[in-house]
Length: 159
Image (tube, rainbow, N blue to C red; front, side):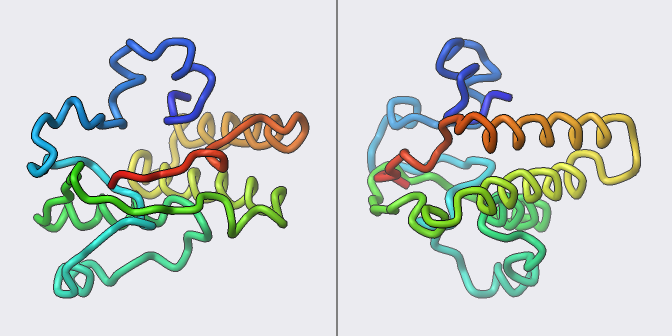
């Protein structure tokens, strides 16, 4: 509900839940320092080979989205650190893989979001899983029906 590009985050940017998953350069301070975070974008990720082997790399069940958050979560669960370094830069041309197949990409995003949630947040059958499935289904339908803006216009420059 408070993803980095959602309407709720833009309308209520000062709420703690709005800031929870977004680290700003100002929050880090020193541009050459690093800070431990939950996850970083796979498009701009560097990882040690032994750490990737330790968690069996990326989970192939994810298609296009959420594979980076899943990988980082599994790395953290096995004692590895995920760090954000504001001084490191990369250009990621967001949305190029999905531009010509917008509807399947929107569906893939929501399916992967549910896979992540059902794997890491609610791993057993529960009302929370059902609620997540329903809410993600509604959100997906809204994006498909009304062309709700998403992260495809965001340009990531600092990782």
